[in-house]
Length: 318
Length: 225
Image 1 (cartoon, chains in turn purple, orange):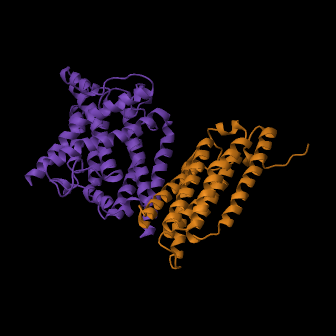
Image 2: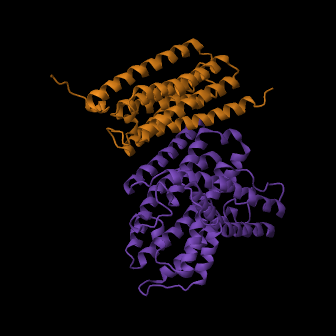
Image 3: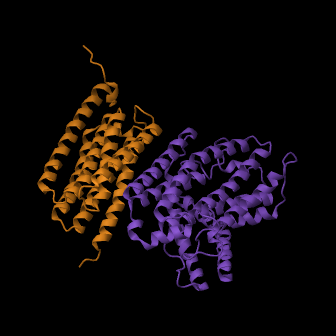
């Protein structure tokens, strides 16, 4: 019991510790693809260190929400890691506290606070980005629900550990047509939810076109560091759910061997899977152009249709 | 010698079926003509892969022959013919003219997929092997999606590609209903389809050189000179 609690905390530590590294690798690879050298993969750590040492300036016009938002944004992905299989295949201490839907709500809570904080200051770009994020948010919401519903039809549960076990145990379920469709729909959701390229340019610095990043423009010092870190962790958590639960449910510490060595061995394997995912992301980010704002509904509409087709094919196959 | 068991071959075939359906949805949603074209080539490849996997799983030489013929005609010959006959300018079209906008057509496509799965449920009573229950609804769905795209698009080449997609759907369902489909039937189709691709391609080329466009949906009135 205590061991499982310890592993749970270790998972959270892995997410906190390695999230900036993934971001650094992504940035570096993108620069390499564009024939540039790019910053070191450890640059995000240096940025965080620098920001944490700097003074923080907060607008006198803002309320407590502006000051609380970075902490909420930072805590929610950490909280979600307690619910999902980051390193182990067997359920840990907090595994049954909430399902995938619950994890989605917790992540949405962080997003909600960040949006409120963006509206809180007088900055004209903040509210614009916040309302655009809400727009993307309510377009992706139905897709998330359909995806989770289909997953619960397949696995009989939406607890991530049980879902993952289902794909591992039965290869027929793993190769089923609805599984591919679910994976594609969820992938499109990650792109939309994390502000990745066809929806939003994650590295763009043009305020009028920003969606995701404009909400943290007003932050400085520790607040900015926490927001940056929170963004990296959110991507990390979404990737963990995508890779460890849906696409490649292998390579985690097995149910028979519960030693610490097994859990630690899972860390490089999970990072390797993420590297593969990051490569795909780099290809997408270097080859696609940003969609016009009102075409985003087409993008999420496609994801919705794919998810519903997955559900239909599952319903009639039974 | 059997490194892969029959059941695992069939499950990989189901995976190909999922991606096959996905490419058909892609042709409904794609705005660029070149994307449609590439999706068709990918889809034909998946059709051929599916036939090959089924042929291996059921040890049917007919299906292997079908796979080989499909690979030769649909992923090599037809794309080559389309590229040769139709003017290169046409492939640079970034916005295919459509009667309906993309979200509406995607929603209708969703209905068609539902209809396909629903209708195939009636076939369940007939004795069909389990693997047909993967291919049959996907094939019918792709047939309907292709026919739908054919009616919605106003561009000649896009319409032709939609027709070929529908044809792929028919074959995808066909290979499981009649696994011992005589290879001669497939061979006949393999001659037929490149011929009509050639005819439509040449016609499109003619229309393009006369009108400077291939938006056949706009050509609705006769004019006396």
